[in-house]
Length: 284
Image (cartoon, rainbow, N blue to C red; front, side, top):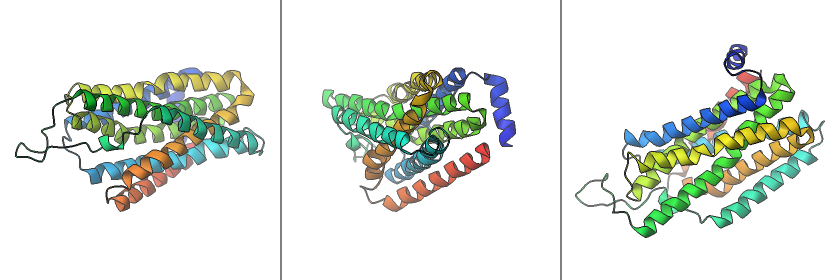
């Protein structure tokens, strides 16, 4: 089954790691858009459901950071020397820490301030300049957090370009990040709607914007590792470190602040299990 999936992917996309990364970036961005579009039919997702879904996203990213980036970076591309990959992990986390300081945290927008009057839960407060500014900051923050995801996909396909046996791992990483993009895209749309923006226009645009950054970064990651071979373990570590930072600094605190930490934890476990299954089945 794994061989059939990889063979079909190569037949459709070709063998160029850059083109494969471009296709992977498009796929994960489309899955982000799908998640953002769910707000059109799932009009009032509960905080409990959102926390569970974001916990799932964290579990996927947590497992992927190790199975598809850190471990291969050490074992396959550093000859067992952990230093280059771990340096990359540290640089990735430091980059997100410094970049995050430039974009204020927007946790309060994930649930928003819903009107609790007779108009019903779907009625939102009017847009104000302050709240619109908050939504823009939130979109910027999510876009920042999409960067390591797109980079990770590109690095994965770049690594596969040097070792075709790693294509299964690259595909599993792409599918895993695409899966976690669904709840992330929904969270962006819910934030936009909760701030009073039009559900059908601005909420979906928010999802598009948050996912679109992944496409050029996927291509950049593939080009970088395809042209500069010694960069590969550092790049894999960088993507993993940035993802781990997002999990610990943003997703887990957000999902544990409103009384639904058990649901979020179960979601994290489910995400980690699915990612491990994908990695074993597609890479095996």
